[in-house]
Image 1 (cartoon, rainbow, N blue to C red):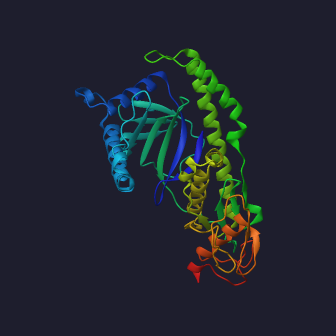
Image 2: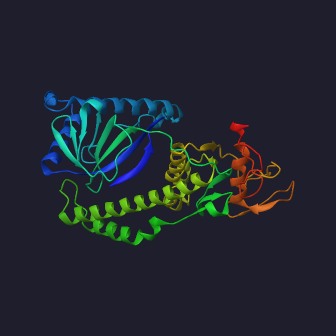
Image 3: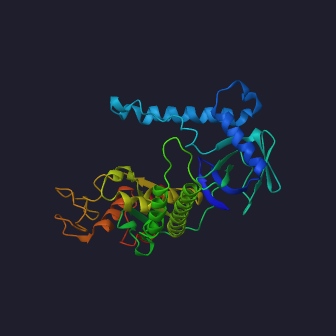
Length: 367
């Protein structure tokens, strides 16, 4: 199995493939993972490549946490910085650079004499510079390769699109044909998840005791259900992003950060909409095909009029779904007005609601 590429920087992308891991290879991977997490005299027994890479990754994560988070946290919370997970909670993840990996036929040879079988559902576009070998919560193993990529341009269409994120509809756009309704994959699977939660609750081991076979089975079924939901959300977002990118030269996207919704009454529905993953898929798809993707700051986009630019004197409650401008009298659905505001702020003011440019007009960067 492979997943479509995920951007990992300029000119690079990640391609993820399923691994067929034998019992001996699984034992070797878990041994490398244990050595990479321990500071013991016998570290020389394992490969130095994943150990060095783990130290580099941990250093980068600490530096980013200190830069982006620590200064904004209250004093009492600054001690709760990211750290090592407990051994029983962490899933094996090993990173190998170019000198520690060698793809050959359908096999992946890693430093330390580890040989894995890769399900090459399609060939990567270039020679991998690194690979991340990891196991998910279900117990499946994957190899995520970083490879150089080239832009795959699409024909010009002469159209632009504005995108506003929401919870009633995942994406409301200036084009009626390119909206993304809330599919509610998580809600459809809620009955099964509730059943597995109850099974785990009945079989919950006491403190200090090993989990029973029934508890482990219920936990695995629950993890499989969540993995299926994640794949469905990812597939829905990528298919929509492909259509939007194919049909438009430039897209103005609300640079929405949904973290604040985690403490609101809309937390469950917002999480089921997978706003962050869908936005990421759109940005990556635009980068892949050389489209102009412009991120727009979301402040006051629900209060400003896309026609005249006037701002309402008070914030609109979520229950009010129609926007009425007191200055020019324009009346439109609230989310549609916000989507048009994305185009205005991005400098892609359309000729009409469908986002078509006037005849002979050029995008700002080509003018």
